[in-house]
Image (tube, rainbow over all chains, first blue to last red; front, side):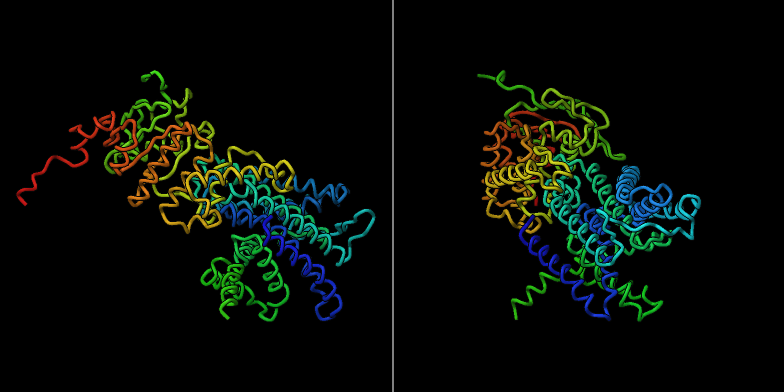
Length: 318
Length: 264
């Protein structure tokens, strides 16, 4: 890992450690811990999406489906088969990875808008599946009474414990992803993004690497889905619709696509905006989302992390 | 000594490739001897870049065969051909612009390394060692072309001449047996071109066979052992530089029929 990454990682860990201390002692923002758990869950998905979009240059408008597959696998296996939640989580990852592989091999041959449409179509199919397979998924009304997580007999059904669990997994995934980025795999992904023909000439099996990273990002989303299920204890298809897929892509773009830290920043900002700060706009929140996205694409195509070199420049001047 | 010291390394037989109605390669045949420099020249649109694209596996030929180092490679994927020992540069430079100069060459080490996604993500000791080897190897190749002082810069920010050198370093990093250079001198000034000629000789000394497409006739005549002249996808002449220089067919293809300027 590069030095700058270690520094940011260190700062992030300090922030994550202080966050509950501050939040739990200030009553007005006590529920921010709950929001932060959702930030962690979505961050897990967006780390994968950032690898896929920002590094390998392949878009996906179907990641809500992988999130949903993980969530429903955990929900169904734990309630109907009384499987251990951890085993169910692993089973969910395996199933999602398999589905991602089957979907990825043909669709990643497409480029640009066509790939976006193919993944979007996949997301819609899975959403319909969740709605229509009533016997298995409970249909549109979903199903509840999903047990919480325990670890070594410790009940994690407590916001603080769950916060620690979720963010530990995010940090592990983040370190794993950073290692991948700074390896021959990461270089292969970035090279195919810049020039696919040159990457091929260097012996990089571009189609294989696209599929590998698609499957990996699907696996991340599946773990996030399992964590989501056990946290809210209730599942319905509307949590995994097309709008979520779009929102996830938006988070990654707003934060900064070509930088994995951007994915975390965008997830944090948009989740807090959506869950907390946009309530004042009531039903107009979608307009605010649109305005934010438009402003970013027009003025900050590198995303919010693109601001840091500019700020450094201003800092030096003043 | 004599020609028996050389063996046929690349042989192209009756290669044809068309795009819609355009016959880019129209029954082209030639051979390249091991350890030599062969130049492919011809007017714009003669099919030279198409030839490179077919040999390196960007797209397959319609018909015809290509044998490299005793193995038939026509229609194989670019990655497989790279693994067999053919590397290349591009006419319109294709550096990885948002990666550093060193990282570009490190991508060239891709086929010489093997870490998978799991060992990369977990940073297993084996992978760390390999990563160090990739980095050191890449530095050696940067030094070989004289770009080691630019290692940390973004490749997209380099001037064209250095991007061309970077492409050569990246191609060499795959440890090829044969290197295809597509207009390496395009856009270079005289001094840079002289440096390039020296560089190509040093590449040859490493035992790498060189095939180049080039418009700079001084360079071509200076360094090539043999020249193939193409026009409209066909071979119109082949031979040593001296023979090509005086071939009337070649002169006509390049300059058109002789014009008498005295009237102007």
